[in-house]
Length: 222
Image 1 (cartoon, helix red, strand yellow):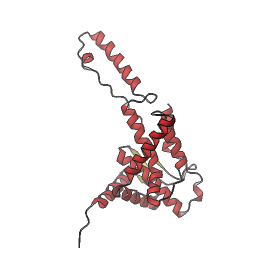
Image 2 (image 1 turned 45 degrees about the vertical axis):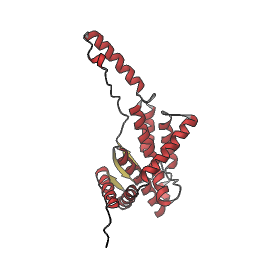
Image 3 (image 1 turned 60 degrees about the vertical axis):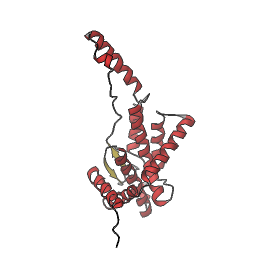
């Protein structure tokens, strides 16, 4: 399935030659991956770990554990209360097929479209985090993220409409991260990545939640 291929591309974003990283470049990579992780927590996407360990040309990645949602079929009342068992079975099968046709990756319905939008925003979040924290355009990983974004977004809109749709999601992503608590969470998780290179999901969530709590805690006046 093409969506699954886009997901795989998204999961392991290539970063170029990892051997040439300087300390500032390593910090940008940490911000980049931490941005993906913080956005994932904010958007309710499951992941297994976040890493800045180079592998196969990748400077780092977030390993996600999310697959496209299966359509939830709600049978209408007239189908559920149909007294003839054979007719009810026929109507139920026809209704399920219609629902599945309306909510699949090739013709996304509301649930699939929402899943795609969350992943597009999560793809944007790496570059958005680096830009917000360093005021510089993030080149590391941007190209591979963009390929995943283009692949995901084509299921929702193409052409000029697709470009406007991506711009809208890019602005939503920046607004999502550009808060004192989320920027603090990105910095805290990036610091942890610089120390240990790889952070599991439980520790990452704990770091993010603690950083958010500190950032939103009222300061005591002397």
